[in-house]
Image (cartoon, helix red, strand yellow):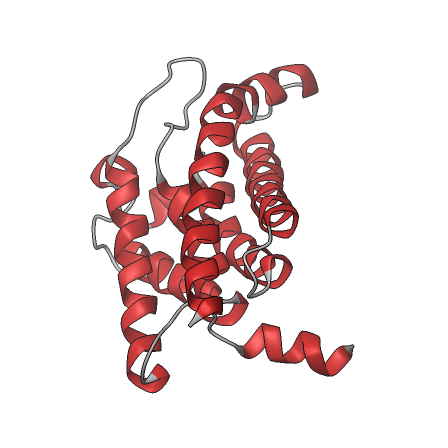
Length: 192
């Protein structure tokens, strides 16, 4: 059991061909997809955090690349933003985004990708993949809400209303899309 989990943890399920070449390219691609998803940002007014497509790519990185490479893609994304490259929502970069209201969500990305990859496995099974996306989303919400409570100090009811509730409809849609894409790609790679 431990050996099979280690193989899943270290494997890259959806990459064809030479994995030594494909893996670094895939890590960079998912880092850039997350940055692209950040630019599709909708300010909601009821929360200081905009709704973006980032989480779709964060969780797909984990599900398609596996836990280690998926998390690595998100660490690269965060490093780019920390270094001043405008990859965060609405062209943001640097410490104000990492230490501000969006910081908890951003810092959750590597962990969410790793957990999604670990839970999803390599088979593309519906229940496992759905559970993986749900857990990854909950991690992003939990760390985002925790950090938002530190930087804005709302009471608990207001915290849920600002940190989680506005994002639930979009999260359901992104989970559905992500699970469908992951199952399609993982199912195809399992058959080849």
